[in-house]
Image 1 (cartoon, rainbow, N blue to C red):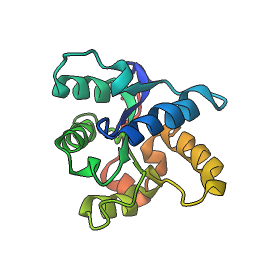
Image 2 (image 1 turned 30 degrees about the vertical axis):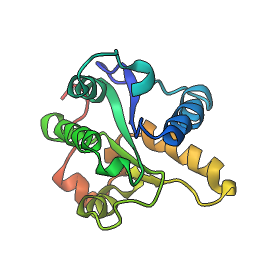
Image 3 (image 1 turned 90 degrees about the horizontal axis):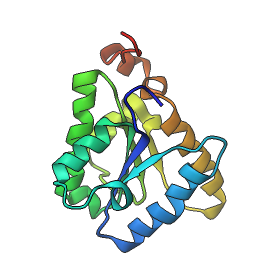
Image 4 (image 1 turned 135 degrees about the vertical axis):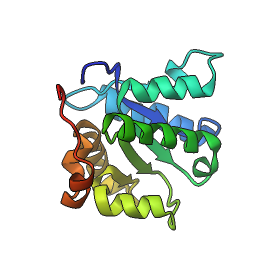
Length: 172
């Protein structure tokens, strides 16, 4: 973890969808926190947010004190204000700190015509991962996701992206 970070990854997802919540808490959490050679401490809304704290405060704190922000996208979640606010705050880290912290996990095919996702695929395509269509591909998916959240996004980006957003190194 980098200095100042409490978590490796803040996971933002549709907490109102019981299937997505169960998937995040029972699958994603286990695969990233409990399994693998290095556990990745996650920040999860349903587990780690203090009750009664305003959404904006929880999101701001979670994004600021996590090395990465993982967006678990579904069609329903992509339409929510919480998703838009979290995306805005994660983009603020790029503008304020020159750190690209965004990782997108497409749990369902979503935002197929989004200019943002098309641009992101072109500039930093490895920061977008898609849930596999077959169970046989799941082990590869989990290993790929672990790698993506461990590596700084500038290592995943194209030379064009790096030219326009040269990420600062620690101590700069």
